[in-house]
Length: 219
Image (tube, rainbow, N blue to C red; front, side, top):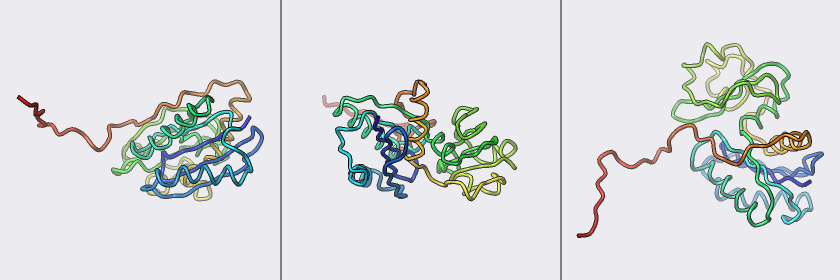
């Protein structure tokens, strides 16, 4: 088994290669505005570092968010393209799950990423492998009573540390494709069914058709 994992749901453009036992190579660059520019060179770099070829990949793992529309679709379209070109399965995993797995925590905690608009994407976990709630998007103040004093991981928790008072500054801030691949490999080895690579947007895109838009057709 050779898994190619990638995630662009957060400002981190991250790619990793996993052979079913360990991460062979990983790349992570934090730049919220250059997902499209950085992703394919990162794939090339990871393959070169591991000394493997793209046609050796047996499955693609894609982080499905939640995340902003533009960044998230870069990773998902790329994953789908690789899957079609290589004729290999493409699996999805919640991006918050990757951060949770990277934390290694064994106690209940929350993961929160920056959703912009003064909101966070977040979910509650029993431990690093077990998510208890569906991903949600909320203003930190609206969930303050649910997260205050609870261990918290991620850029959203760091950004709003007056609400996420249990923020773990020693835990990863951004997504890691290596952690995502490691989690996927463990789930596949256990015979678990991974979800399809369908995006978790949770809210409408910023660009919308104006309310008073008029269609002009030729006479």
